[in-house]
Amino acid sequence: MENDWQANCQRMVKEQIERRGLTHPALLDALRRVPRHLFVPESSRDYAYSDGPIPIGHGQTISQPYIVALMTSLLDLQGNETVLEVGTGSGYQAAVLSHLAKNVHSVERIPELAEQAARVLGALEIHNVHIHVSDGSIGWQAAAPYEGILVTAAAPHAPQPLLEQLAEGGRLVIPVGARAYQELQVWRRCGKIFEHEPLIGVAFVPLRGAEGWQEDQWE
Ligand code: SAM
Image (cartoon, rainbow, N blue to C red; front, side, top):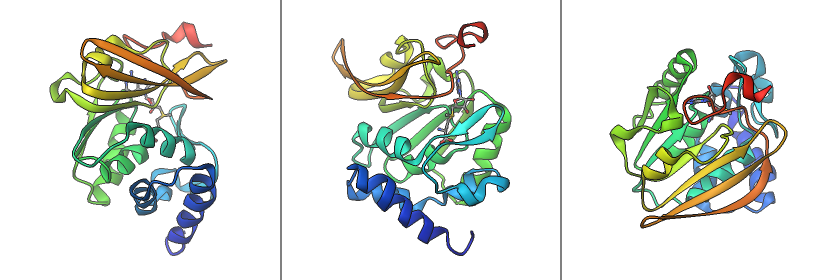
């Protein structure tokens, strides 16, 4: 895998991303630069570039490459933004964002996942991702406002604290819904008004925490 990851990664980008209509050169370049196999457990490395999510322990997953690419593209980043990710998980999405934004703050509630993600990002010498162990359902006020916020777990609703941490014109990309059905939503801040549009149906693990699902609400 160490030797041929770039070939596998190129194929992933061509067949799973470009072929499905995401063709922005900077996005494709960012995806080609991140060795996805380093973000999955060693026992799953052979499947790292396959077309689906992969378990990463603690009941969590690294998202399907296409979903990572789609959510990233919806932020419409130009390179100078400060971005918030809620749900660090493996750190893969944060690594992709690191090549497209100036700074990435990523919040994870499970300390072991945050530590492992920080280790991999450190080994890759990615220095513009800042990982915080906290309840990301209320955002990360210390580095707000954000031009883009990306939530990688399904929320019962778009949390008001996240909307309020958006910069003017900023975008929030978030899956909203329950276990049975979720839709990906894009929210945009226009002054005091927040507009949103639904996109496609998706399947994420639950967002927990103050603005997330409670333990007995998901099963
Ligand atoms: N973006 C990740 C990646 O690239 O591997 C995948 C994230 S996984 C689908 C969802 C993550 O959200 C899990 O790691 C989970 O622990 C985390 N999560 C759920 N609720 C959270 C909360 N309130 N604050 C921070 N992280 C949360």
